[in-house]
Image (tube, rainbow, N blue to C red; front, side, top):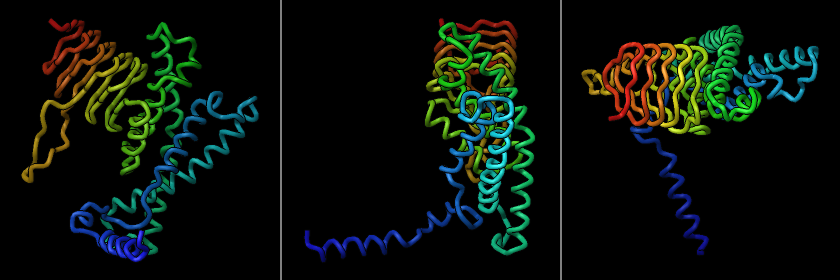
Length: 296
């Protein structure tokens, strides 16, 4: 290839790609600074897994004293990494005119550290809930050989570790990071749980591929769903500019509900406690407790 042509094509496209379009500028975050790091968020999730399931995901776990030591090391590292990523997220989401000014940067950094501490305070509750999820999955699957097998290999556990982490961060008001964390699990497992959804204890997803749980879904305790289930919105309320309004629009599943594969439950409807929704059912109306809805 002619070297002059190569240089000409490369330089022309460097110049073209260096220009930011109006559309690109409109999509940029409001603040400044470095974007949150997806690579670091993956590392953070590895630390959280090691904190919650140390016997399974921390090679240093051998006895009580080393367990406490490794947990301390992991917590300290988690604080450092997560506070940095929260600070980056806050800088991008802020409305401060000059987020790079020293005083503004200090305030954002202090907020990030305080939010990180609040998250760390809630890890014990995340752990409690995840162990109920592992128990529910083991109890609902005769193919499960042990709790260890569920914790180490079942996609639902990876999805729920990410969801329960992301949900707490979202409740704390951390921008951007909850959705990135939940999408990391989505891409790895095929289970799509919005961090805004509310899910009770002892939650089981068998197989899991293709499950979608929308942002405003509310799921009670001891609920089991199977692959391909959608808890979605039936329609959207639009504002004056034609954009969807964030209002409750996804289903409520009360305690002890079971939803079988490929069922679609749509809209702000309630599935009463102890109900069974059969496979391939399309449901857009509420049903009372103890219902059994099957495809006809």
